[in-house]
Amino acid sequence: MTQALPSNLRGALTALAAFAIYAVHDALIKSLGANYSAFQIVFFSVLFGFPLTTLMLIRDRTDGNLRPRRPMWTVLRTVFTVIATLSVFYAFSALPLAQTYAILFSMPLIISLVAVPILGERIGWRRGIAILVGLGGVMAVLRPGTTDLTLGHAAALSAAVFLSLISVILRKIGHEERSAVLVLYPMLANFIVMGCILPFVYVPVAPADMAGMAALAALAVVALLVQIQAYKMSRAVIVAPMQYSQIIWATLFGALFFDEVPDLNTAIGAAIIIGSGVYIVLREDGATGSGTPVLKTQSRFGPIPLTRISLLQRFGRKSD
Image 1 (cartoon, rainbow, N blue to C red):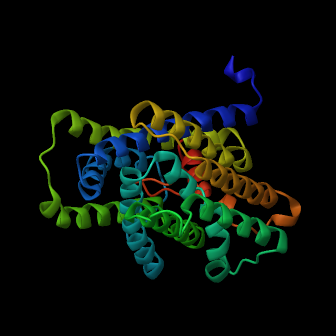
Image 2: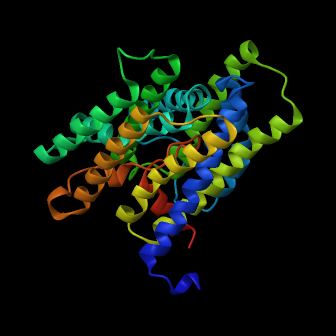
């Protein structure tokens, strides 16, 4: 019956399923974050992710070795990934889910800005207005001067900035580097850095919580594979906006499991940010916006560093 649906609709529904799995992943981070440091959660999620990611990379038949062809950019991306991963995990642990998503959804705006110096992109006046409006939405969520800004807010903003930088760098070098280089270097760096810090923050892990940390890795890989299928079924401009459905799951999970109800400012700010992001994505798909890098760079944030849509599509082709 699913085959009878138009490909764009199938792609959209598959993307909604992928982002629902990601939302479960993020809610699990928040649950574990009540008892464990973000360093410890990242360490074990990466540890359990190695076998699953290796199996996925086996499907990439690109010839080559593990030496990066663009070492400087690879090192920069690796460092930024360590910072971004820790920031994301801490933000989900410390802030309400909906508020964290609202800040992270500013990524299309930041990608458009950082693509100017890194990729030489230009920002037209319409896109410039959309970026300013979206950043106004971020201010509505943060409300500087009227509410206490915490380390969690700083972590969410840090995650949005560094994930955007990672995505744009990946746009710059992704066509030259092997998938294994793009994936394994940041994972190894996360494992080593978090492992060095782990003795200072380690808390004995209950068996159920260890299973939860293993589930983080499994959920991330399953969601990624479902996301790949969505990009094989439909155009990126159809799939990419489906990420905003996570705000619905965040509201639902927050109310059911964490006693969180988004306030009016968060709801208004999230709506503004999402509206600006969708406008930028849709405008890029049009003839007048073809230079915008968002569709070719942005995807889902997460501990497995495959954050570029064209890279996801490459994986999809390799697995056919």
